Amino acid sequence: MIRVGPAGWAYEDWEGVVYPDPKPRGFDPLAYLAGYFDTVEVNSTFYRPAARRAAESWARRVRGNDDFRFAVKLWRRFTHERDEAWSPADVTAARQALDPLQDAGRLGAVLAQFPWSFKRTDESRAWLDDLTTAFEDVPLVVEVRHASWEAPEFFEGLAERGVGIVNVDQPLFGKSIKPSARATAPVGYVRLHGRNYEDWFREGAGVEARYDYLYSAKELEPWAERAKAVAAKAGEGAEVFVVTNNHFRGKAVANGSMLRSMIEDREVEAPPGVVAEYGEAVRGYARASANPA
Image 1 (cartoon, rainbow, N blue to C red):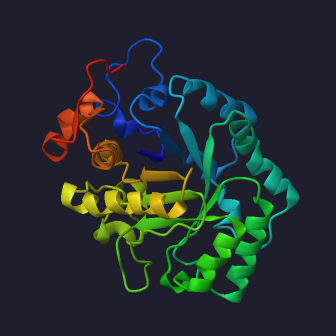
Image 2 (cartoon, rainbow, N blue to C red):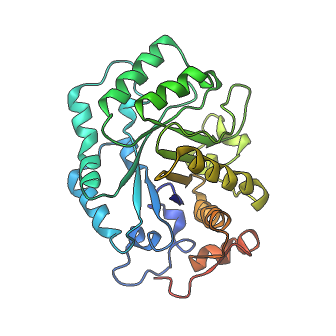
C-alpha cells in the first residue's frame, strides 16, 4: 500500500486554492483532503503535544476513507531540543495523540525528523538509541538530513529495531543526504521538501519561502519510481507513505496528486482550485473533482 498526501492541512494560503472560498456550511478541511488522499502528515504535533481528544477527533473526521492513515510528526523535544535528556513525562505527553490513533487503527507512521545539524556522532547515536527504545511499539520512521548518516551500520541498526528510514528530497548542498529508495522496516517513507535552494538555509527565510516550490513532472517521476522501489524492498504488507511538504499555496496538493497519478498509472481527481491554479503542471495527471465539497 502506497499512501500519498500533503504535510499539514491548516494553512491560510490554501483558502481559495485547495479549499473552496467561500466554504460551504460545515466544511471540514481534513475530511475534504481525505476525499483525495490516503494520508496526511500531522505537523502541529512537532510544536506541541496534542491532546487525546484532538487525535480522537482527527480519527472521526476521516471515517469516510477506510484506507486513510495518519503520519504524525514527533514533538521537537525529542529531535531538536537536545541540550538535556527528555523525561518519562515528555514521552507520556507525546503519546497522548499517538495512542488514540493507534487504538482506532489510524496511525500509519510516527516521524522523528532531525535537523541537518544532527550529525552521526557517538552522542547522537546514543540519543537515537534511546528514542527508538522509548517509541518501540509505534511505527517509527527516522529522517536525518546530514550525509554522515549514510553508513551501512546505521541502516542495519534501524532494520534490527524495525524502524523505518525516510527517503528525502531536499536542496542538495555539500553534506546533505542524497536521494534514495531505502527500506529498513515494513513502514516506508518518502518525503519531498521542494528544491528552493535560495531560501533553504537563508537566515530570516520564513516557512512560506522555504517551501515555496512546485515540482515539475520530470522531477517527480524518479520519486514515483523510488516509492515503488521502497514498497518492493519493504516486502509483502508494506505501508509506504509519500508526503509532499512544499505546502505554500497548495503546491503540495498539486504535486501529491501528480505523484498519485504516476504511482497508480491513472488520472486522479484533485480539488478544482488546485487544477485551476496549477493547470499546466497537473494536466494529464489530475482533473478537477466533479463533487468537490
